[in-house]
Amino acid sequence: MEQFFRTHDYLVEHLNASVRRDLMDEIDWSQRMIGIKGTRGVGKTTFLLQYAKEKFGRNRSCLYINMNNFYFQGQGIAEFAGEFHKIGGKVLLIDQVFKHPEWSSELRKCYDLYPNLKIVFTGSSVMRLKEENSELGGIVSSYNLRGFSFREFMNLKTGLTIPKFSLDDIIGHHERIEGEILSLVNPRDYFQDYLHHGFYPFFLENRNYSENLLKTMNMMMEVDILLIKQMELKYLTKIKKLFYLIAAGGICAPNVSQLALQTDTSRATVMNYIKYLADSRLINMVYSKGDSFPKKPALVMMHNPNLIYTIYPPRSDRQEVFETFFVNTLWKDHVVHNGGKRYRFLVDGHLNFRICAGRNVQNRNAGEFYDVVDSDTGHGSTIPLWLFGLLY
Image 1 (cartoon, helix red, strand yellow):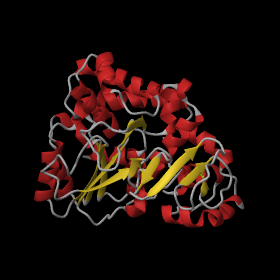
Image 2 (spheres, one colour):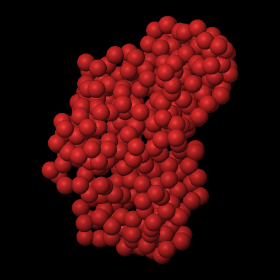
Image 3 (cartoon, helix red, strand yellow):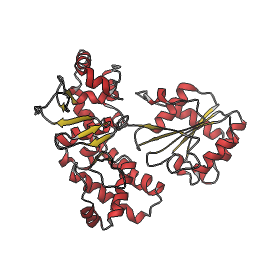
Image 4 (cartoon, helix red, strand yellow):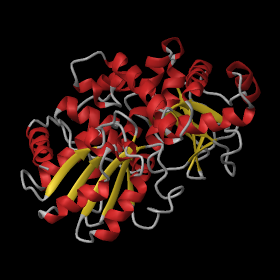
């Protein structure tokens, strides 16, 4: 146990976290079982250590452990939690919980045996804690840690504390908000950098961003999908090829029959793989209103613009990048559907948006839809794209 405390103390003392994520204040920390999911690489480990440092310092009632430690190949989580609880432990932080083969039943044991012990664990976005896990469905509070928003990226780069705004604020008061922000900074000075390398915290490290992201994407498929979905290794090349074909194809409705032929699999398998890629936050599936999986999505696209520049740079045209950014930033708190012929996206069932790579706005009836443009400011139903990066 002492070895784990030494590791915990070292990690907390040497934590170099430049940004305090808003999720820290959104979580109900009074809950006994808290699951934090997120895309590989968005900073879940840093988030746990930030919580430990901020709330407990070096108080030994809190302990961080990682399931990568080979010690847990021979000992269950519940047994370790019991030992921690005996010496006064109150909060156990478990990183990469899915690496333990019996993680869900072990967490259930902890919940039942130690009512005074709080468990906070991190896991892959591929995990379905409530939908697929009956052991934890009624006891775990699940939260998602996303990559950096444009607002967080810009605050880090400028030292400002620009607040987040609701979608209603942006639609109804965007001209006032634009004026307030532009009096402090021109967001478009930082916007292209964010689109290229601002979603994942890798940009804070002194390493090649694209190479780091490529490594992470491979880990998402090799570990998150194969391990959690319990797939055989021989199918990995098919998933990777499918991902590349989707990236190279741009934003469009997937031709499932063609993709099945190209990957030498069935149509049903292609649809399952597409769902796995979406669950791992490598792609987004956009459906027409009323449709959902297992139906074919109306559109597939990369999960965020950084992936476009990394996986298939020749496809990084402005229209595709802007639409990918828009969907990704709306995805956190809103429902995005495929729109009609005159507009691209339907948000929350009643708001229509058309993304314009230039200023080629259309004549239309007032309130019919919103043009989202690449500009410093907007007017009326024309709104600058960067402003949607302040949603979270």
